[in-house]
Every structure is written in C-alpha cells, then in structure tokens.
Length: 250
Ligand code: 1GP
Image 1 (tube, rainbow, N blue to C red):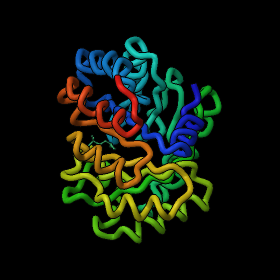
Image 2: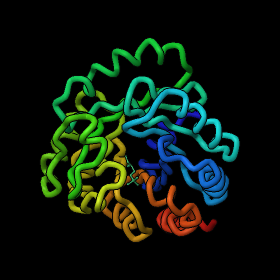
Image 3: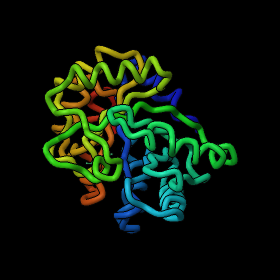
C-alpha cells in the first residue's frame, strides 16, 4: 500500500488528507484500538507512528495493534534510526531542514540505511521543519535545533523550497507534538504558494476549527495526534471537516 502516490494524487485534485499520529510512548492500547477501528470507519487517510523519545520494539507493537483494527496504511514518523518497523507500509525519511544539526540532516539516515534496505518499506524523503509555537516541544529539545520563529513565514517558505530543490518529496511544517497553538494560516499559505510538493501540517491541531483553518490555508495533509489520543471519539468531528472539504458524506 504505497502512500506517496495517494498524497500526490489527492493534492493534485485539491482533495485533503487527515492522518492520525500515535506516539508509542504514550499509547493506551484500548484507546488506540478504538481509534484505529473508528478511523477506518470515518475514512481517515492513514496512520502515523512515532515520537521523539521512544525505544525499539514499541514501534512494531503499535503498528501491529493499528493493523489489527484498521485496513489503513501506517507511515513511520521516526525520531531515531531505531524507530523502524517492517510491519509498517511507509516511512517519512525526515531531514530536519529547519535545523543545523548534522545528526538529523544525515547522521541518523546513514545509521538507518542498511536497516531500511532489509525492510520492504516505501521510503518518502521529507523536508521536516519545526516552528516555534509558543512552547519548546520535546522534538526541538531532543534534536537540539532552533525552530523557525512563528511569524517568519518567508523563512519557512524559503526552507521548504530549498528542501524541494534538494529532492524532498514532501514538506512537513510541524509545531511539534503538544504545541501550544497550531502553525498560522499565513505561514501555511506562504509556504504552499512557494512549493510544488505536497504540504503536511501538524502540531497543536486540537479542534475541528483548527483543522478547517489549516486545510483552508492550503495544507494537503493535516496530522492530529495528542487530541485524538486523549479523546478518540472526537474522530467523528475531525472527519466531518475532512469530508466537508472533499464533499463526501461518511
Ligand atoms: C507532531 O504533528 C504532530 O509531530 C502532531 O502533533 O500531537 O500536537 O497533534 P499533536
């Protein structure tokens, strides 16, 4: 189940995608099972599994748990080269292009490469940009990088475009998990207008209104993690926004 062609095709048609992120560090197996079953029912696009601070083993278990409840693609969203699992479908191979820490621009990738060769994962090179949304999130701390300032939409756009010229297939603007507020619509619009690759937005999207704003500003894919892990039943409200944009009824 290759995810990248689906993202490109949806973006070409102006269709939106909604991804649910599960962090194996915080997983509640009952809630995740419920979320997986409901996500399939409500037409969510795909799952992501990952986090900044987890250990090997939990990733595989989480992917298997999701797969046992939902026939949806699972994309790995690794914080470390240990965070790989052959049970997943795809991998966002993240280059942290907002930062200047070589470890997250090439170091982790060198360590991951031989493992990836042994796994049959779809590898999607992704230009990953952190944005400072009021609070310092775990990912900024762990990666020891400076995020892009909230108001600097032009910096974000230039960074995303540089990523595209370097061969990245996706641009991912992230406030980080648990961000105090979502990325601004102005930054989303500015970045979207500057690039030709699909744009993913995540971090701090806690309400259907915030999801609506991100889609309306030009996000092709929006990722919701924390809020749905807390309250899986909200999936219906988030899905309603997705289908409103895609003009489908659930
Ligand atoms: C984090 O974009 C994701 O990388 C999701 O963030 O947990 O705040 O929804 P939240």
